[in-house]
Length: 473
Image (cartoon, rainbow, N blue to C red; front, top):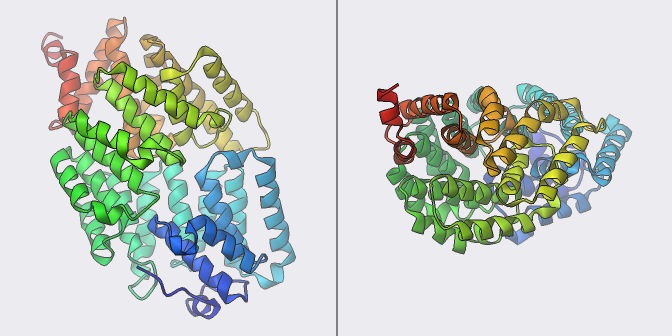
């Protein structure tokens, strides 16, 4: 684990100079960046929030430090996109950088520009700037991590993979945080279904640092897409003490463990995690909300029959994150909120959610890209989820089926977006129209062609008599 924190001179020697003369600010920048890169909290320094506070306090004019703080906040929540207070902080950052322009390198100025784009929700523009930085400064970890986060929200798996491939040969083991690149690259490879290569690179990252929770996460994806639940369970349990160290990814790794248990229909193990694991019992972050809502929905779709249990869990989740009903932007997290309301939301709550989404789309202070994406896809997906929850399966099919190949644009991983595939198949098979039933059968055969060894997929097929249906078609 990297712990020899870099001072001003060290950053200069790595050809990554910054405008601060404070060694304390420089070292805390490294501390913050290390936590971000490794998905962990360094509690010695107050975790990432405490570390960011110490960094900015050490030098309020440290521009790159302010960019890092803003980038982490922007990628962490939708709330910043329409918050007047937060947008004012971005304006202050820009004004400060302009006042200090003579002290800043082109790299630092580009980071400010990227943050400006990100603050408006203009994701493609922000990542273009960070990629421009990486052409001349391939070891700039802030540009690496920020671009990876944006590609995740864009659902751009090819760029996610290739962004790391372009810079990996330019790093070496003498550069701090080098080991994490293998896990990032491995995850990108999983999303383009290059599973053997992904497993190889993830293992290389783990060999360098066994507490690399993201690399462990990449191997979970390998086993998920290979329909190997037994291997997935064995790996995650055998490395649990290592990735459990990583505060920001451990809950999601437990989610993957639950997916493997669910694949094998071992509901008892899934419920044990739901009822006893802190990330599920007391969800706090957006990723926690996404994990829990998705898992509960998958249980429902698989025929788990304790409806009262599911309703209580969904109700608890709605209360916990109810203040987000007016927060929109990143569709990846938005639609998991819509998923909660589709399951246990009142008509009034669903109307409020829909109205607030319309207001977001019409808010011209937000960038065109994110509003346009919500306009073109957001309305349809939310309406489809609400129709599904109200058992209007035919309407849900008519909305989801034509856009099924565009769903990757909402962001997230293939595994996370699979919830929408499962909902579409279920809607097709439950629709009152025979054409929809035939469409559902086709989708299931498509799924079986990719996951013929998946117990879950075969259970769905058996539930709807698809094999017999095909023979009689």
